[in-house]
Image (tube, rainbow, N blue to C red; front, side, top):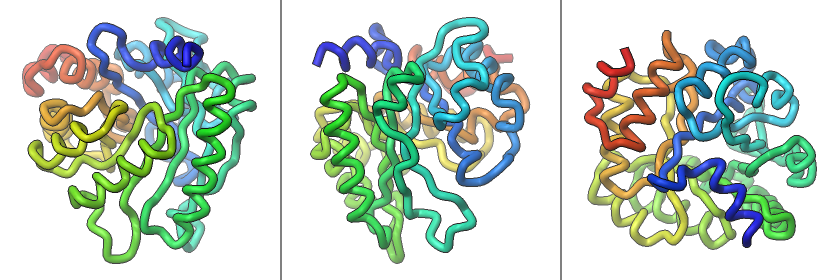
Length: 261
């Protein structure tokens, strides 16, 4: 496990044991979206804002990772789908752990949607990725959500099931939906032996996003894995700083925004 232990310190702060991760894999699924039109610039902005790590697809690593300013952890995303697919919840592998290692990844991530028609295939792929991660000493971040017909995406039972599946698969970190309730999410994090981080979802108001993060942290979350709610801000660097203050310093959300300026 020493390889994983060394690499995970590039993602999870060794002092706070929390992480602010900014996924930037949305272009694969949504195309040329706002905030990700200039990848080099936005990578620099979240790095300057203090984020612990970013998530990129393999072809975007060359866009500017570790070419400017402070260092930042690199997580290479292995699975994808597009919004043009009749079932955008059907994720397939487009990269391997070995490819990610060659690119200098500190970790890899995969996406699993429980309740989707092709759930079994995604779980099978996750099992194979977990096996490769154990072989090479690469931390695995599993992004797992309840997504399917008639499924409540924030139901504590469904979110808890997702977290348990990811843990049983051998994940080192888990990203999932926040239930919207401190008490119910605390039960989920307390029952899991690995760090659980909350997703940011679609872009919302500045203060609303930070208050959600604060509540998730109160419930035992190990941080946030937030994409559009970070990189689509007018001032991405300032908002990333505010996120980091809430996660790492337990700052009040309104005060964090004020300090970010």
